[in-house]
Image (cartoon, rainbow, N blue to C red; front, side, top):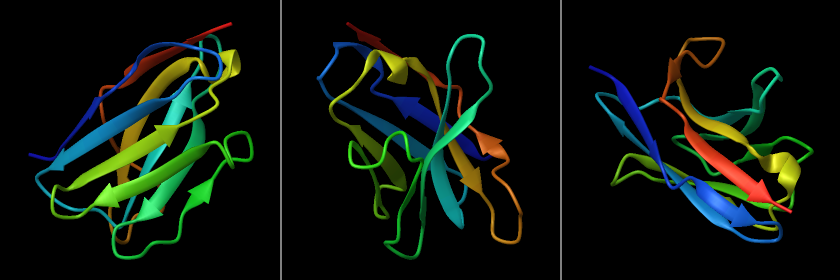
Length: 117
């Protein structure tokens, strides 16, 4: 059974940092990524990374502040979030895109990130 399990969310003051982790079990993916959903808003893309390469992709809103990385040996992807803003407050979801699929379709349960001003 394929599972993605996130951890590392919490409450932090504006300007602070958090690191999210996502452990994948059951398979590896072509791409792994992070999305977020704020209250009353649609889920949005944050960042993604291919499993077999180092090129990374970011939403403009997080570029220069967030860093996505992965540890193949641990089958884990990370999201380092620095200079956090209250507008980063959301539930963050880890996602996997299988080779041949056109979109992310395996999702974790989500982890809450709250940034206070």
